[in-house]
Image (cartoon, rainbow, N blue to C red; front, side, top):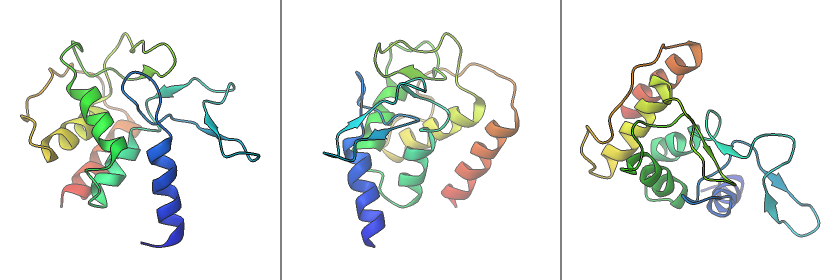
Length: 144
């Protein structure tokens, strides 16, 4: 693995927050000491941006990495009535609405790679949009 890929993976292993130890959509890295944090300018969430982290890691054959395992446990948590669209990494509060179908597809595939039943937590219908469809296409591409 090339040095930039190794450095990126090392960063992802450290960039985990909240109850489920999930990677955030946005991350701050302090130059002085390399400390990681959630930037105050954006919501400290695992959601629409960070959802691609477990997708890309699994696509690369790295499904045993900590960020993937954390996302898998989050999506398989029986406390969720449906897959939440986001989780606040400071308060652990989840979205009051379901994840998009594309996000749900990523969650389903990531769980299936670990042998979780394909049904898992119940899904809740939601309107597809451009972003959701792109996530579905990426997941389908990763599966092949």
